[in-house]
Structures are given as C-alpha cells and as structure tokens.
Length: 254
Length: 254
DNA sequence: TCGAATTTGTGCGTATGTATC
DNA sequence: GGATACATACGCACAAATTCG
Image 1 (cartoon, chains in turn yellow, green, blue, purple):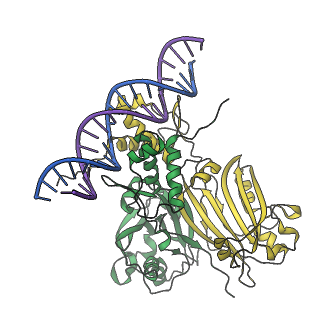
Image 2 (cartoon, each protein chain N blue to C red):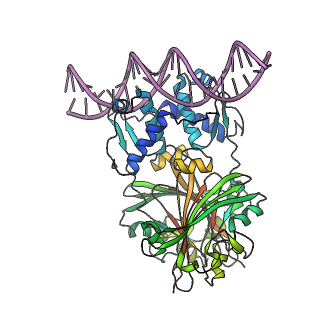
Image 3 (tube, helix red, strand yellow):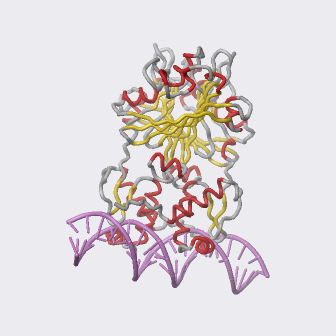
C-alpha cells in the first residue's frame, strides 16, 4: 500500500510557474525567476528548476534566452478568428478578408506548379493516380508573422483550359477557391472539413515559428461541384492552435 | 552577427528518432534505443537523450516504461470519427450512436446538478449572472478508455418544469440534447461550434489518461432555439487529439 | 523464488559559453 | 574590456521498476 504517488519536485515547480503565468501574475514578456532564484525559493538544486523550465519551453509557454533568462512567451491569444461562412464574392481571398476585418495587416506567399496526383491526393480528388493536378503552397502572414500554412490541389482538367489555371497569377489572383471556380461555371457550395488537433511537425514549427511541440489544428478541406458532386479542390491547412479558433455553423436567423 | 541559431542537440536527437518512427523504420510497439545506446550513437551524454525522449513522450509518439525502455506508441489514431450531422432521433446520444457504428463498446459516466451561472456561462447562454442552470459533467469511454470529456449547461427555466430536467435520469436518460429539447417542444437545429487546438491541462490529462502536454481539440458548442434564437444549451467538449477527427459539412447530394 | 543486470526517473555539483551591464 | 549573472550541457549517483537467468 502507501502508493501516495508523490509528484516529483520539478513538476511541482513547473505547476507553480504555470499558474503564475495563467493567473496573470507574470505578464507576457516578463522575466521569470532565474535558476538560482528558483533553487533559493523552493530549496532544490538548480536542476529541478532546469527541468521545470524545459517542460514549459516544450509546451510553448516560456522562451529561454541563454545568458539572459527565461521569459513568458507572448501568447497573442485568439485575437484572430477563423469563420467558415460563405464569404462575399469579389473581396479577395477568405483569409485576407478575415484578417482585414480584425485590423491585421495580412499578406501571403505562394508558389504554384503542376504535379502528378499522389495516392493520397488522387483518393481525395477521386481521380486516377498520376493525373495532372495544380499544386499550390500558401503561407499566410499576419503583421508579418506566419500564422497559417496551406497546401492545395486541383485537378488540371477542371481549370486547365482557363485563365485561372494558376491560382495566384493573372487577373484572378488571390480571390479564393469559390470565386475562381465560379469563373469556370462551377458552384462549389460549402466545403467538407475534417478537423484534428495534433502537435506541429518540426518543419511546420519552423515555418510557423512556434515551439517544437506546439499544438496545431490540421484541417483537411475539400470543395465539391454542387452540380455533379465531383471534388474540385482539396487542401491541407495547418493553423497555429494558440492563435486561431475555427467556427462552424451559425445562429438561426429570425 | 554570427546568429547561427544552431538547433540544440536534444532537438536533433528527437528529430532523428521522430523520422525513424515516421518513416516506419521503427514500427508501433518497437523498442527504441536505451539512453546508453543513444549516448554511444550520438556522442552526447544521457541527459540529451533523456530530454529528447521527454519531448517525444509529451508529443504522444513514445511511451516510456521505467526499467524496461522506450517504445513506439501504437498510433491507432483515426479509429473513431466524430461526425456532426443530424443524428437519428430515438437512438440514444450522438456519441453513443457513433461509437456503436464503429464497433466500439461505448459507455459514459455523468453527474448532474443545479448551479448558478458564472459570468462566462451567463454570457454564452445570454442570461443574467447567477441564474439557475443545470450543470452536467460527462466522461465518455470507448472500450473502457476515456476518450472525451464534456461539461454542459442549460438554463433551468427551459427544462425546469419538465421530466427532462435531469439530463441523465428518468425516462429520457441518454438521448442527447436535440431529442430532449424536442420533448419540451424546442427545435434546436444544428449547433454552433468553435474549435481550437491546445495542449491538455494537467487535470484533463489525468482524466483522459494521456500525456501531460498531449494535443486536444477543445470545442465550445451552443444549441439555439430555432423559433426564437435563444441559446438553450452550451457545452465545453474536450477530445483527445490523437483519436478523434471532427467533420463538418457534407458532400452535395445529387 | 530469488537475485543480478539493465533501464528509466530524478537530483546534485560543476564546467562552459553567452548575454548583460 | 572586464565582471557578473545566466542558461546549457555533462558526468555522476541513487532509487525504483523491469527483465531474465
């Protein structure tokens, strides 16, 4: 018996620091106690505080600067909101609209190119493996900081003969999938989205500038042609969990 | 100058192990190198490998068994799927229906009680602070393992005079919000959900039996009365990120 | 059944490189 | 440029758990 399950000191220290941050006793950017201060306060050696900080750094709550100290990471909370209602036509991409509404300077980078459908993409677009697709990578920035990365695929035989073949070039640049498809007479309606929460991969963490194990929201989105039910675009979207909230559905309109 | 931003050794080691897992070189359940083996292979002390493993454990990729070693966690990820279409009436709670479809033995625990609306709950239900609410906590289990926890609030003045006042007692136990509201003549339609990804709190991790920093999907759900637009139920739902995918929308029906 | 070897978990002291003043 | 404070990494030691002969 006697399985008291004593929590180790380094977890107690980490908890104490975590609550100080959560309660606001330590604001964003504030300097946390140094390791020697921690060891004085809690009575343990420096290693205990060291491990506690390692945990908080991995969780993304704290930033450590060698030689300087540990600092509360600016959470920059969920200021931005990701809605999924139908956007107004002719106002730019949905993300850009959204960012503008929030008073944020939004911009994005992209690169497009034709590619052959991999097994996964072919299954999602319901086309044969190896068929031509238009592949585009996006990186969205808010006030210069990357907040969202996306990768999209469209079957070439839908847009291939049109000016919109390149999603982000020509007269139809940056207007979003729904509007672009409307140009070729395709009504895409509301997409199907599968949402899951996971930790960022190392590559994503580097692109998004977040902690190596920061939680992200991974959305698999597919647009369908309302007329014949065919998939016309599918995308993998990765959002920084700390900065985005995705809203689905809307209140009944009276 | 010289801001080379060298990645710390423990991240390099963690990265190497991560790719070994991702590429399938190490299958699920396989044993990972011991700390002494790691220190031999990479040339760093055991502390480096220790911290690398700590990261992978927090990410949920690895399980550590003291005295035995580190093992690749069986991902078994997308076994369960969380859809959000309208469920069939009279078939039990949506979650129970879903689990049954997947061939999983589902069960749930709950406890209800009246409470006074906190500031946050009052705002979400659009009632005065301190008004009476029915507060229920749920824990859903799949094959005995907890996979989802939820907390819901309903204004008492909607269901107060009815048999359904206790969500999980009496003749209307376990039938889900939509059906229960239908009993008192309220059509709730499709709820509004706000999804975000974050790490589990310590309490949640204990309830869900997951790693202390495991990614979870936190959903804020609110049902509205279709007739007058009033909120009739709001809930905080926490899903284990590794086991649930939430789907929104549906393909066009031809 | 028991004991030895291995392995992880945890904490200590210390050397080293870096940042700050 | 020098002194101080700081984080990082390392080697080591002990405890607890597991495995295996």
